[in-house]
Image 1 (cartoon, rainbow, N blue to C red):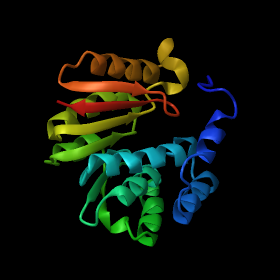
Image 2 (cartoon, one colour):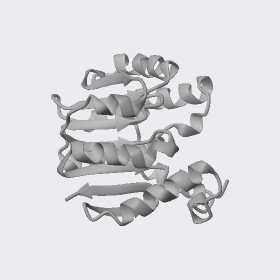
Image 3 (spheres, helix red, strand yellow):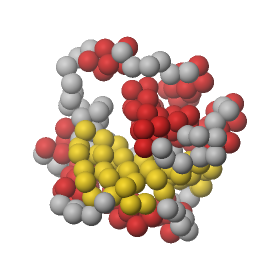
Length: 211
């Protein structure tokens, strides 16, 4: 796996980022101890970025595609006002059970609604409009998710898509996931319905604004 930054930079950046609360720290630790593929976890830097994005945009209605163990959902819920909502889509029952334990411990957990099942099916039943969408799920469906959520996003709303650099593999795509992410990136880059910038935060975040 390619390294996108000089060794030590991630740790340096985290040390200069506002510390997360004790519950998110506990969730982070438990994910690494108890769950498969803990590298899928949204870490402290990106979690703080998501919370700040919610606060800066004034979002009240958030959609998340791909919850994993709930770190990103809780981070975004922290940034919401009391009447804000996070609707998060997850297919893995084990992840849902794990995440809900932490949602129940948090004062912000009541803002989060989990919908279990294939995300495209769940999306078809949602009306929106959403203020902010965070996509971090199976990479093969990235372009499908993007197209499915764009009509449900308000004008001026934000889509954030994670892992769009894919450890640098987008420079020379070989696997199906590599090609799917590169395809999504090319598709967004040419899409005149949105303004966009691809950020090199961790493994890449596509920052997209609907016109």
